[in-house]
Amino acid sequence: MTDSTRSTDEDGRTDVEALDKEYVFGTWSYQNEVDPTEVVGGDGVRFTDAHGTEYLDLSGQLMCSNLGHSADAVADAMAQQAREGAYFAPGFATEARARLGEKLAEVTPGTLSKTFFSTSGTEAVEAAIKIARMYTGKQKIISRYRSYHGATAGSISVTGDPRRLKAEPGMPGSIKAPDPYAYGSTLDPMESLDYIEEMLMLEGDTVAAILVEPIVGSNGILVPPEEYLPRLKEIAHEHGALLICDEVMAGFGRTGEWFGCDVFDVTPDIMTMAKGLSGAYAPLGATIVTDEIADHFEDEMFCHGHTYAGHPVACAAGLAAVESYQEQNLIEHASDVGAYLGDRLEELAESHPSVGDTRGVGLFRGIELTKSEDERVPFGERSDKISTGSTVVDEVADAAAADGVYVANMINTLIIAPPLPITESDVDDAIDVLDDALEVSDAAMD
Ligand SMILES: Cc1ncc(COP(=O)(O)O)c(C=O)c1O
Image (tube, rainbow, N blue to C red; front, top):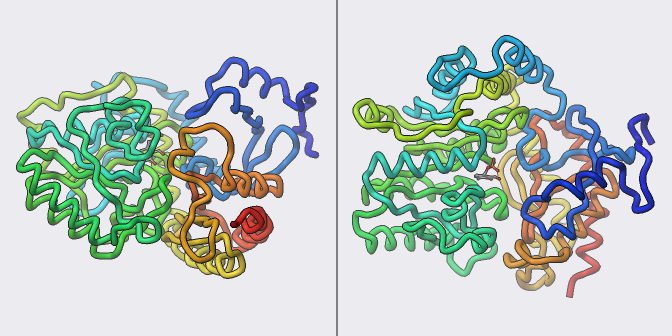
């Protein structure tokens, strides 16, 4: 118990938990199953709830708290900006927005140089789709089944995971392709690429862009073979389509490189960012394009915008966050600790029969579970993402939480994406807890 421990009602809820349940929608959920835990604060890679439990944050909340929970430089920059001028219309230039634009041109690869700022990953993707359409004059977007690109009408249409089903038929021109998923797909990863090439050929010259997460995040941490992304860019360009890399989750050091596409040495035509861009200190999204695409809009209208495009407080957070990654060498640190994390996850795989696969890069890793030691049989199916009740994967995550480790899970995979400042000793603490929690799935095997 800590000083922050709150009193609870007969259902064990604090007053905040009871109010929240009554008055606020839980996202992507059947509301009768929503029962949020009140959190009261965070420090470094840990946070605390109102019942006195401290958690090691093994998923950086929603794979976004890349700087941890006490990045004072970011909080100070936001407070200073709010005092000096919280908001000015996008038609004005502010120092925070201009310097963050310059910074993103510096840390992104190749000639990516000009940015449109928004307030979320969803909006960053919406902007990318519109820019690709305006630039190419074509309408279709090829994306992949195992993907998440956002919640709004357009971005959920190009999303492949089952959350799109409630929004279908969705945006015309959204076409889905298979994924490079060595563990779970019937197609070999490079065969899935041949499939996309065939699609491009059959669609003729009508595809504006191929939109991919360079390393798939919430659909299971899928890392393609080394040659996949370079070849994808080639085939896109051979067919007059752009390559959009959605770096909303993989970006800002998560992979041990600045961006997921850096792992494969590929510069996309358009890149989307959010989450780690501000270390989750402010809602901030960004869509950056190459010089060539930027030039196109010199004499064509850039027909897009929002009231909060380039919000000064959010941009101040973004600038301070990117400077923090640089000043604290967090990208290199993520690579080093990430390698250690990978080794420790391998050990878990060896000692737990229900661990079917561990995969990932840097501090972006997944543990996929299996019911059967002989063949891959998931505990959680894709359809579980939109059905009621909990799966064995949820139960493993609950067991870890009961032992002080917060870990997100999606479909059949535990998603490990901690704040980048995590240390090897924190990793050891987390592995001890996961070692116990995975007994739950071992016991549930066929
Ligand atoms: C790859 C990717 N793109 C887009 C989004 C949407 O971002 P947001 O939730 O900030 O709208 C997400 C969110 O998880 C994501 O992982």
